[in-house]
Image 1 (cartoon, rainbow, N blue to C red):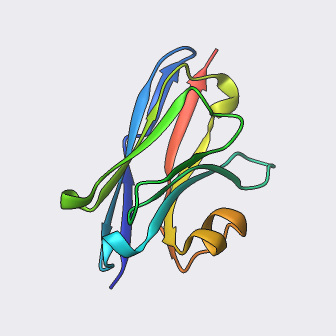
Image 2 (cartoon, rainbow, N blue to C red; image 1 turned 180 degrees about the horizontal axis):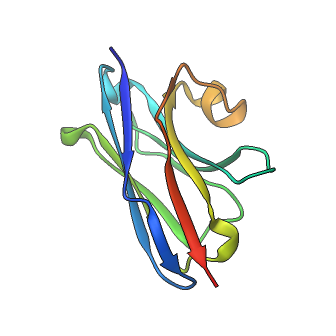
Length: 123
């Protein structure tokens, strides 16, 4: 059974930092891209960051470039999202998902999603 479990969300003041974790079980980790998405109430899902576990390529959405960093520990089957200089507009539920690069990062589609973790940034 494939399972993605996010952790690390919470409440933080603007300018602060959080690190999210996504633990993936039941997949061959090195064969998948893992991406972080977020969705705020009334807004569309937004791609935040994506990492290819096969070659380490990283991708970040324009709204988070220079502030967020995605990384992966293949030995632990875990992907991290380091979020710095957080802004109130970063407030959302953050989800991780696994899949092939095009379907995952371009189409925002996946068969495997985590349950989400809430990030709230106060002003």
